[in-house]
Length: 173
Image (cartoon, rainbow, N blue to C red):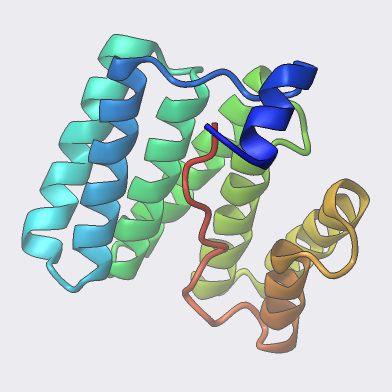
């Protein structure tokens, strides 16, 4: 290990490396989500549902990896036309994030983005606009005005929340 990563380890400012189980679970979640996004919903959606079930069983409903997997599933459900189910799931995940994660945690912010986005797609534009504005304010506070999430919220506010793309976040350790 060289460069900035080694320097961070020496200073004690590194994120702990995931366990082998966590790494495999993250890889499975990402694979299922990317299968779905690659227009292979016949394989991706059932695999993603299986991944969420495994996460809940092995890690518990409040684990950040489980919450991320459930958010990915909600996005996939919405993209496959199941907007009502996607909205319900994102609302549940956002509530769970509020119980288990800091308000500005990237998974909490992503679940809130999904809730606002699917609210808009479901026709609840006033609620969605208010959610995007609150989320944007929190993202500016947490990450600064030029952050990708802030720009995504701005885009959603300009398009009245009709775009069905979320703030894509790879797994970070």
